[in-house]
Image 1 (spheres, one colour):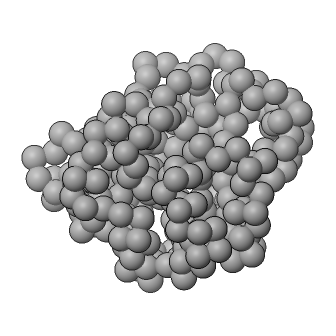
Image 2 (cartoon, one colour):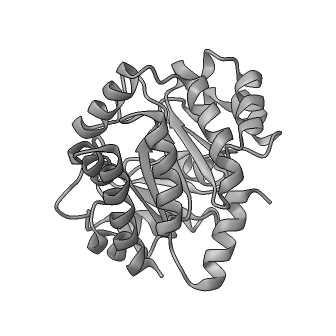
Length: 264
């Protein structure tokens, strides 16, 4: 059983829902990202998603786009992100997931990346712009090394495709709450509950909802029917507005604690 599967099994036994905070690796620098990972884990995160900065992050809204720009300007690369994971992995029990775009990841080579990710201690991978039909060999390389390929579904996913995503995703299925890019929203979609419940017809894989989840109230609302929430832009925004790296770590950890409280 993968570390992600073990985590969700533990949460289900406790009656808890998962909180998966997202930060962009290298924003504002890799040392601060390392401190953020440890602090968010101590504050209650159940897994942490690290965005691999990319020059054309098509699924991201302005907040995470700016984070990618800052990270790239600071010299963050995929290999440096993997080195960071290797450094923090011995100090963490919770899963670490990378989220990135195909150009970055495939350019390393599918087998080479899968081996490097496994060696660093990566537990899951989300490739935003790689359709599952085109990612079968990559996903197989990841599964062979106990790295879960995490697939994305959305409100526009047709039933036959939803079945494919639900049965082929590893660790959890990432359900995008809206049609659009990442970013804080005022309210969650009223149709989201039914859309997430539709996944249950095909698989019992945990379902985590992301895109637009930005307050403890959103988290509590989504947790009524989903297995967890992914919160990105609202955390990255706090990092961006902080007066120093230490202040960014404190602000992010405090917010993670607020978000996790209604999920226990």
